[in-house]
Structure formats: C-alpha cells, structure tokens
Image (cartoon, rainbow over the protein chains, first blue to last red):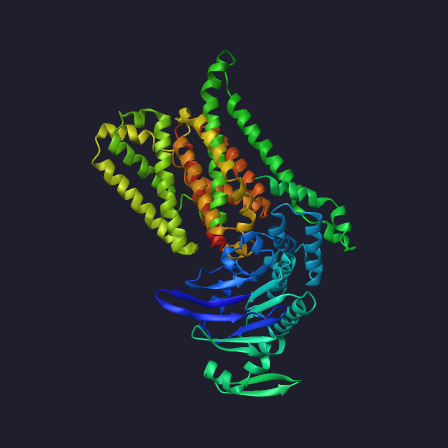
Length: 250
Length: 350
C-alpha cells in the first residue's frame, strides 16, 4: 500500500499536506503525532472513508477508489472510534457482520465457522450471546476486533484502539494486535496516542506534524528524544528497557 | 426483505455449530430470538386479521351485506395500505438516521405534502383535470413531493453529516416554513377553492381516497422491487456509515435511494387518508420494543402489523362507539404525543 502526495482541506484549511509513504507489508505501522496533525484523516483516506482533495492511494496496484467497494472490503478493514450502535445486537451477531463482504446477509456454514473462530480467538465465547451494549469497554472493543478478524482481510486499520481503555485492557489490546500481525500475518496500521505502546508493539512509526510527515522509519529510528521533543514541543527522555525505547515525558 | 428471516432459521439448526471444531453447545443457539420473533409476528398477524374481520362484519344487516362490504372494503384496504406504508417507511427512516424517535413527520414531510398539494391547487385550481382526476392529482403530488424531498432532505442529511440534533432542528424549522407558505397561499385563495382543498387535507378514514388504491398498491410493489437490494442492506446500515462502508456498502447511494422510497411511501399514505402524524412513531417503536432485534424483516413486518391492528381497531371504535364524532387521527395524535413523551423521559432515545 502506497500513498502519494495525499492532500485534504477542510474549509480552506489544509489538514493533510502532500503526504507520501509506503506501508511495509506484514508489519505493524503506528501513526503518532499531536492532536490535529492529520493522523486519523490520513487513515480515513487510506480506507476510502474520507474523500481526499488530491494525491492517490495505491493498494495492490490499483487506487483504493478504483476498487469495487465490496472487493476492497475483503482485503482491507478499518475500525474507527464511533461506537454508537442503537440496535440490540449480540456479540455473535456483531461479529457475523464481518462476513458481509463474502456472503451478504445469507451466512454459509463456512461463515459461521469463521465467526466462531474469531470469537474464540478474542476469548469471547462465553459471552457470544450477550448484547454488546451490556459489555464493558474492554470486552466491547474485543468484540469489534473479532468482527475485523471475521472479515479476514490482509490489511487492518485501527483508529485509536486503546482509546478509553485502562492500562490493563490497553496493553492486552496491544498484545492482541501484535498477534494479528505475527500469527495471522496481517498488515496492521494504527493511530495511537500513547507513544510507549507505539514504541513497544509496532515495527514502524510514522510521525505526523501539521499535516506532514515529520519522521517515518523503524521504532529505533523515530523514537529518540530529539525527534519527539520537536514533534510534541515537550521535553523527552528516552530509557532503554529490554532493548526497547521507553519515553518519559512530563 | 424476508431474506434475513431465512438466514435466521438456517442458523437455528444445531448441526451448524457441531461442525465448528467442537465448540461448546451454547454456541449452537445462534439466534435465540428468531423462533420467538416468528411467534410474535404470527400473534400480531392474527390480531390484525381479527380486527379486520370485525371491522367488516360488526353490526351488519345481512340483507344489505353486499352494500356494506362495498362501503367498508375500500376503507379497510386504505387502512392496511396506510399502516404498511407508514410503518415500513418509519422503520427505514429511523435506521437511515440512526435514531429511534425521529419520524418522517417530525421532519416536516407531512407539511411538505400539504404545501405541495396546496401549491398545485393554487396554480391549477380545483376545476382543472389536475385536481378532479384523482389519479392524475396523485401522480403530480408524488412527482413533486419526491423531487422536493430528495433535494431538501438529501441535502440536509449530507450537510449535517447525519447529526440527528441538527437534522431535527432544521427539520422542525422546515416544517414551520412549509406550513407558513401553505397558510399564506390559502389566505389569498378563493374561499370555494379552499373548501374543496381542505377536504383533501384533513386525515380521516371516513372519506378515503379510494380511487387511487390500485395505483398505490402497484406503486408500492414497484418501489419495493426496485429497492430490494437496498432493503436487504438495512441491517448493515444499522452499524453506521463508517462500518457500512468498511463492509463494502455504497452508503451514500443506498441512503439516497432508500430516502426516495420513504418519501414515496409517506406520500402514498398521506394522499390516501391525509396526514396522520405520530402513527409511525408509535408503531415503529412498539415493534422495536417487542422484537428487540436489528433484523429489519421482523421490525418492518411488526411495525406494519401494529399499524394495521391499531388503525382498524381505532376506526372500529370511532364508527361504532363514538359514531363518527371523533376522527381516528385525534386518537393517534393524543396517543402518539403521550407515547413520544414517554420515550423522551425514558431518556435513552436521543
């Protein structure tokens, strides 16, 4: 997946300014940066949720907007932060929507298996008949991830998957995402606010500032005191913990 | 529209999950609500049938039975069509906008109809064929109404990004605007013209516009056939724009087409019996409360059946208990208002 000089303007204000990068396949890439730097907008453009004003996103040799939406849905999944579903849905029903790109509303036996596997993978089997609005935040987030797993796509885009989760559930979530990449071979793109989660669990970091890319490279290349201080305008200290860079900021 | 129902029954089959690597048997009970949903639908259908039968037969003089049937049958048909049109349209509309207390009426679709109808009378006058020929008049209403509401509401939804509070606010203002335009026109209108116009603008099943029943039925069948793909996407639309797009749905186009369908259904109902606000709100929410599911085949059927049962039973009471002194729309408005307050105070709705 490659982005070429992406541009997005809202009311004349440029929020994404000629951004170009290539996402490494089979790895986890995290987008970090201060609020309003354009991370989520870029992710929205990559996944065709947001219309762009310029540039192109080439996905498997074809522009994302050139793909048939249903075909793209079998190869690329995005999970955003909007969680207001009004309907009464059980976990199983929610996860079964992940099979929609393959079978529409008529699920096959194979779809049922995929749904059950996704639910097991997320360790939600004993609550598969619970309504999602009765789950805790962490469980609900896992149910949504299970839906993405059931969708069985090569690329998975997650917008702030650790948002509103406590330390326990957030680090659990990051381990799950690591497994998506290592065990299921998916290419994962994340938008993250917690720099340390990004540093500990991803392979590549893409740092945004003012709608442009400030730095893009492996964790070691990007996570250093100088880059981060410039990025956020806060003093940083980087410690080495088990070979990973831990950021201290206050 | 009934495809979701078929899927559900298929999943109840216990073998479906026995083959899934010996997962615990609790997982086999995939859609526990489907069997009870079918039972509820059946009960509602039976109840509607009883109401319809009573309406046709109550205090009938056997000597003039044929005559009575000729009077009652069109009214009954109109009520059933209205219930189905309003019930179905409201559920679809609520799903589009992802909110359960919004109805097409709250956003001024009724006022839009009243205004459009008045404008047509104003420019053609009541003696013209555009008013006297009911089918033609209906067709004109329909075309103007569909065009106007697709432009107005399509733009409104897009502009406010489906934000329900903005939509409600702008919708209420629009409803007022339409009403004002309409009342301005009637003020400068010839009093006789106004008199003729008024009879077509007050909701009542006692003077049903029976001429357009066949036209309405045919049109509803065509619309449902043309929108069969979009209707089958309703369950996914429930998840919201971003999730639906993620799953490969052409969201904006689907919404546009569904909205057009909603408009046509509301126009049909309004042209048949006049504007009955709140009916949609009541029956759609009763159906949602009863079925507690996202499956639109059940929700729509339930909403339509609730509408049929309540309209027919209401009309029965109007005709035989109150002897026409109170039109059924009064009950609908009073009951609907109370129910609306109940939904609001319950606090979960908005």
